[in-house]
Length: 354
Ligand code: SF4
Image (cartoon, rainbow, N blue to C red; front, side, top):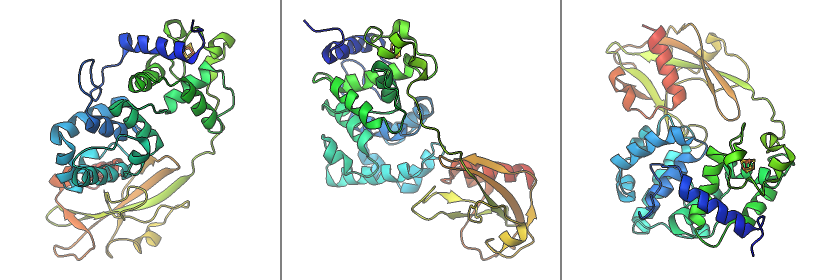
């Protein structure tokens, strides 16, 4: 007979819970439905670094506009990055499009089924490859995200802090991953972490792993996983230049293809650095020489590794001003692939410059 703490018993208890309590998610096949690898891949790329609640409306808009990988591959990359605007981590949108083209044009629209081949595609790392292999193709793969790490740390009372404990937690997750229904199992652990074994107040009383859970027995569940202290985020500064033509068009430019916000559109500006800029100093980086006027207030935005504070300066350009970039009518700004930061700059300028 299987012991209550054995991996088989644990995965069976979790799968039984999943059959009763699985979340209904727009990308998830319901019982009896065929899993669509395109939807699994699209959702997993969108979910990297982003919450389920934020992803859901984007996912639905994407699959309505591009219902197949061939349709997505045929779309202009700017349409894809534009539709992605607001989801953040924009390199994901460019990789998404590159991956769609590769799979549509070179693999007849079929994703590879094993992790190693999936990892060779743009934008697919270890986690996403494992998730697609397990969920879309029923392969036994160890899928470990933040939810899974938390659940493993608690189930086995691992008190070593993250990120150092990652490899140990992955090994524990691997030992629990069953041969049967690996895709459902992967989604079940994620669901457990998202709905029951939540970060601050785990609902141990309704947990299918209540019995074997060591952290619950020790009364230390809410404090796990332990995390190493992070260095505080530095603040960087820059100035954005809101240049207006007499017909109301505004100057935008495209950021370099690689790096932060790579390939996205932006209001031209200085580089972002640790020290504040004076307007005189910054004017040397403006798209053209003009009477730049500072707008009151600042635009604040937080990236993963730093806070950014942007001042905005405005000037009027002549009707035939020669400046490098794209003149965009105000009414068309919504169609541009402007990341969230730049949408904040636009809102700030519209509120203060007119
Ligand atoms: Fe998490 Fe509590 Fe379940 Fe343990 S018993 S896995 S701490 S919800």
